Image 1: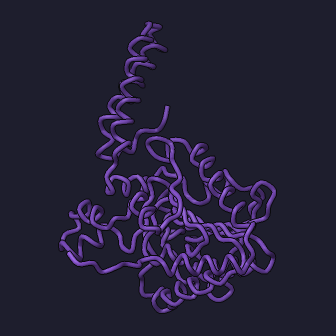
Image 2 (image 1 turned 30 degrees about the vertical axis):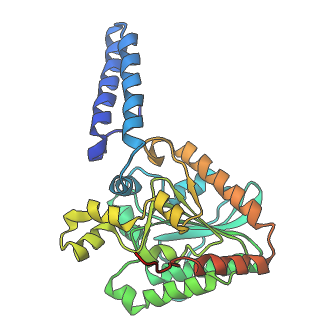
Image 3 (image 1 turned 90 degrees about the horizontal axis):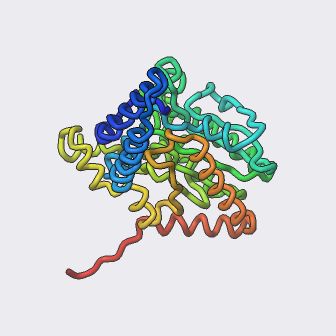
Length: 323
């Protein structure tokens, strides 16, 4: 049975049923009592409850799923999708930043450069990874790897999962905004295919620093936003408790992002979230990456640059109309 120790508020009805199912299995094994009919009845209720809960999630509920501590992170996907991954370290200027991981790997025999933002699974790992909030040297390391990919003609795959770049004094002293801006500029001119996927949180410039791509995708329970819902609520409502209201107003759910042209594709997850089935989530992600790269490799470098330029120049276009 799946680990159900971490439960979101809206998942509680489902968790109660799952606990009942576990109890029935234990009774069946320990007392040899035939409870098959009861088990089937609970399993049917669980499936019905799953459909009711997860088929109509609010933007705030998707944010909660995107932050689920059991959710697959970049290194999980890299291990399941790619082979012979060799992690490279350091920005060659200041130090290593473990909040961004990356290096060459093979995707179905094709060499690629894969990199992503990495969170920790426990307190010690989170301190090492800075809770997935990169320092400027993380972005400079990412750019170093992408420039290496261009030199050797390797496509670039980036996995976005960060609440945002680290806003501390040290990061400001080392010019984190400049590092992100340089990445945006240089990624827009890379002459190799770039595919970027928001696998969890896509927070502001911290996400955009590795997400200027020919095709931008998002997992169905991810979000991609200029600000977190809590930050928006603190500014507009003066109360972080208004985060659910802010999530609705920000229009950052995958469906809204697809409609607005911010992302090109939504990748389905196992029902209940990617953390319920790592293998299926990775399978869906791999299929999307392979499909995207297959199409992009048919373009010349000139076509890639022209289409990439048009893609991002068209974002945010609006028209005034009379009421």
